[in-house]
Image 1 (spheres, helix red, strand yellow):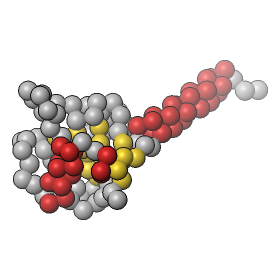
Image 2 (image 1 turned 45 degrees about the vertical axis):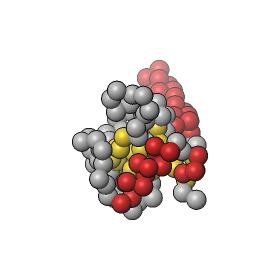
Image 3 (image 1 turned 180 degrees about the vertical axis):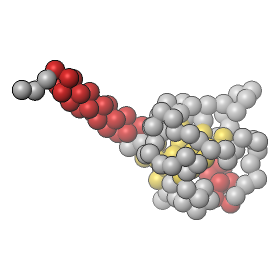
Length: 124
C-alpha cells in the first residue's frame, strides 16, 4: 500500500519540475537580437567581446545565478557586465551576463530588470 509520504514526495517533485520549466521558459527562453538591444547594451557587448576596458570596477565579476534563472552551470561560469542606464546615479538595473569565456563564448543574456528575467542575445 502506498503511503501518504510517498504521495507527498511525488507531488512535490512534480510541482518543482513544473515550476522549473516555467521559470526557464519565461526567463531564458525569449531571444533578443543584438540590433534590438538598447545602444548602451550593444556597446557593452562589444566591450565584452574585445576584453574591455570596462567602465565599472565590478564588470566581469562572477554572477552566481542563485535564483537559477539561467541554465545551471558550475560556479564561476557566468560573469556580469553593467549596461549603463541613462539618468541613473549608480550602475542601474541593466546587465549582460556572459557564459564561459566571456569574449568568445557567444552565450550572452540581457536583463533590464536586475536579474528578474533574462533574454538570450541572438547574434545576427
